[in-house]
Image 1 (cartoon, rainbow, N blue to C red):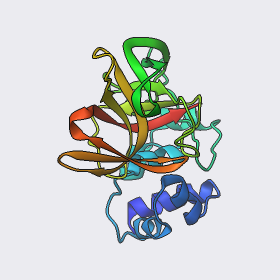
Image 2: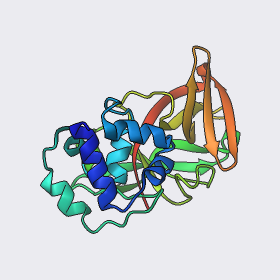
Image 3: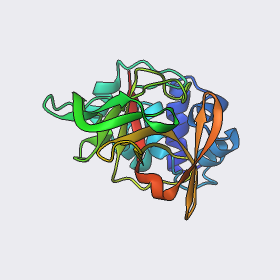
Length: 223
């Protein structure tokens, strides 16, 4: 068993989670969790999400170095199989902008007006990400992963791969100064077409690459 795998197993068992439950929360196979814990697989691409679910830091899972401020902040957090709040920054002035969304976009999306609607405490994984932002979840199409009324936080500086959960900014056909916001899982990134997956209902959405303004990885969420 690798050190990384041992730490993941340790945290999973402390939370009383089976490999199957953890796999379901991450939308991966149980075999994938088994391979990581046994050391047969290298660092998984979903390690950030795994750290959030296990209420620990990415750095501790990767290196074994304690992050005491994170542990103290997250010790009272309540963990659910799908919805885990990440510890907020211990710096009271560290806030993150929440984008203003209004109804009326294509594909059932809400549209970003270019304005900030609110400010929230910054999750610790975004302490050094000045361009990060949050958006309110405006429907239940990604339930049980993300529910209506939650905030998801996106990190523009993190590379996006197939299988990642993302905030997609799409061209608004009616107003060029707006961008339609889609919260989904990237299923396939092609040269000319992107395929996004929603969970409720389970549906694949094909979008022309020319319609995508940008796409940022979701690294945390909160109620």
